[in-house]
Image (cartoon, rainbow, N blue to C red):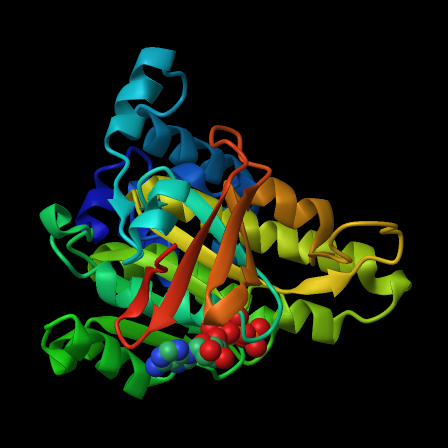
Length: 315
Ligand SMILES: Nc1ncnc2c1ncn2[C@@H]1O[C@H](COP(=O)(O)OP(=O)(O)OP(=O)(O)O)[C@@H](O)[C@H]1O
Ligand SMILES: [Mg+2]
C-alpha cells in the first residue's frame, strides 16, 4: 500500500501523508494499530488531527467492533509454518502460528537459534509444503546468524541455497533502542517484502545487558513491553508469525524441580501467545514443553537438530 492509499483517508493531504510515511506509517493497518500518542510524537502532527486520521484508518479497516464470529473468521486465516519436525509441529498445534508470537526459551546451546534458522527456510515453502510462501526477517541481537548453516539446511532440504538466502532479510540490532527502531521499521518493511516470519534472536539480551540492577528493572520492563506490543500488532496487521528467543535465569526461590525460569518476568509471559520451553534430552535429543498456553495442553515432545535443521527424534 502506498501513499495514495493514505491520501484517500479523510483529512490526510500530501504533506500529512509524507509525515506519516517518514515515520514508517505507510499503511492504514499500521496507523490503525499504533497508539495515537505515539503517532503524534513521531510525526509532529497535532494530536486531534491524529485522532481523526486513526479513526478514519480504523473505519476503513472496520476494526472498531467486530463480532466473535468475525474474529473466528479472521482466525481461520491464521496459517501455520512447519518447523521441520512433526512432533514439534503437533506440540504447537500444527506449527508456528501467524497472528501470534511464539517464544523459544532455553539455556545456551539448546537450539533456539537453530530452530529460528530452520523456520527462516521453512517459511519460504509453499503452504501445501508446510510453509507460508513468504520471506523472513531475522533481527539478530547477538551476531549469531550463520548464513553457512542456512545454506546447509536449504541444501539438505533440496532447495536452492542462494535463492533461500536471498529471501532472508537480516538486521543486526546493536542495542535495545536500535532494536526498537528496527521493530518500528517492520510495519513498512514486512508488507513491502512479503515477510511472513519475523525472528528476534534474542528478544531480551540487550535489555538484560543494558538495564542492570533493581533500580532499572521497571524501566527495562516498560521498554520491553512496548517493543513486544509492537511485535504483537505486527502479527495481527499482516497475518504473519513472530518468533522470539529468550534465555533462562536462575530462580533463587525454587525449592524443587527446574531451577531455571524464563527471563523477562510477567511482561514476556503475557506478551507471548505460545511459550516453548526447550531442554537437552539424552543422546543429543531436545525436549520441548509448552508452558502457559491459552489453548494448547501442557505437553512435551522430543526432536533433534540435524543438517536439515530440525527433525523428529526416533523414540
Ligand atoms: N549442523 C548441525 N547439525 C547438528 N546439530 C547442530 C548443527 N549445528 C548446530 N547444531 C547443534 O545446535 C547447538 C547450538 O544451538 P543454538 O545455537 O541454537 O543454541 P541457542 O539455544 O541459540 O543458544 P544461545 O542461548 O547461546 O544463543 C549446538 O550445540 C549443536 O548441538
Ligand atoms: Mg542462539
